Structure formats: structure tokens, C-alpha cells
Figure 1: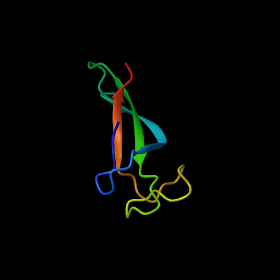
Figure 2: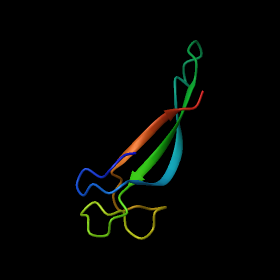
Figure 3: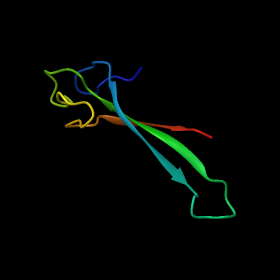
Figure 4: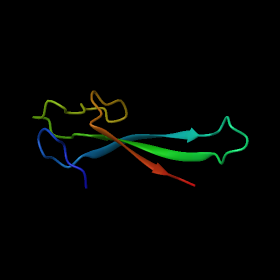
Length: 68
């Protein structure tokens, strides 16, 4: 589990999106990634995400996982 580097609270997922690699190169395999935004839920932390996790004030980290 990832923790906030400033306050030590466990980070929470807020939003995710897909990205690709090599999708414009026909002779290479297209690689798809899911990117998950990690935010701090601690209201006392200066990196606090805010009340709306779908539109966080600050993203502490983005976890990138290969799908295929």
C-alpha cells in the first residue's frame, strides 16, 4: 500500500484513465496501460485531495499498470 510522503496516510484511488504505447507504429505491439491517480484523504495534510475525488486538488502519485 502506498502512503502519502508528507503525512503518512494511506493513499486512496480517485480516478483512472487509459494510455497507449506504440499505437502509431504498425510494426510494434500496441501496449495499453491503466493509470490510477492516488490522492491523500487526510484533511490536515497540505497534499489533501479535496472533497471531490473525481477532480482532486492534488494527485500525489499515479500508478501505471500494463493491461495486455
